[in-house]
Image 1 (cartoon, rainbow, N blue to C red):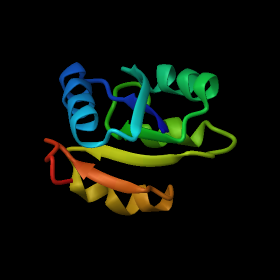
Image 2: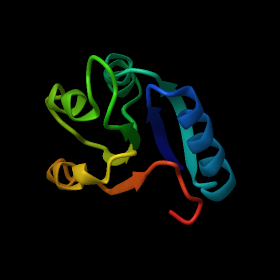
Image 3: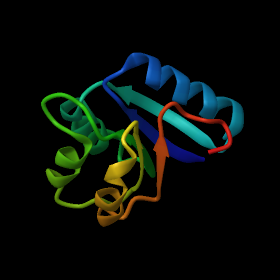
Length: 107
């Protein structure tokens, strides 16, 4: 199983992503979900996930800001965002993938 966290400030985005993962990715176990960067940091330290689905544009702390606060990034990251212009920045964080919202099941 791939131990996974979802971090997004929009509840409907978390619900949609959760549904897609549960239906199409049975090897992925969603450990927990968080609605802010601060909560996401705590969750990463607590659960030590294999994978984090991370929204880029969140209030107070963006996904990029969140990752910069970690001493070590020892998990894979799939960024989720409605902005396709941030892909280069995501690549610099060694993103495993980059999903544009709204999420398409084919992705």
